[in-house]
Length: 184
Image (cartoon, rainbow, N blue to C red):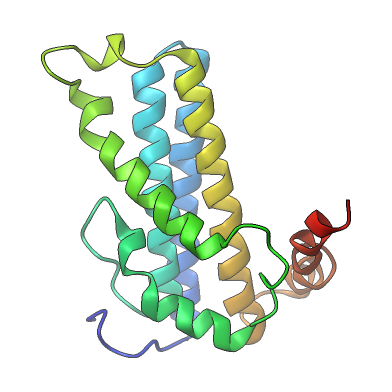
């Protein structure tokens, strides 16, 4: 499967995306455990992998092969075009462009991949990152998780691949979340 091909939505591609998303969730859980264990560089590395898996799930939901890169967000164009065709209003009232945010965070996390594992300029990774850094990057990974979940749900909802309870979630909660920001 080539990313230049047109998306092909199927129940099988939705299931593959769900499994990839689940892998991202496992990395997020590992990030949390490592942070509690005071392994802050390990937590950041796990957060980076969770972001990578969450974003790659967006390719799979469309029946496309995810790019082999630590920055999959830079290749979101075809997916976002399809997403906007399906639900042009889901992010209409957002104060920040969520797609631009995914691309930005993908790039930000990809730059952490090597540094969080191997350090920088002969300084070990364990001496670079603090608890605050780990908490900050964990919270950003949660933001990516939520945005990717919403996009995956939208595709699943449109093509009727998700069960009724997921449909109700999207209809009642997720579709309102961005408009509530404007109601201050």
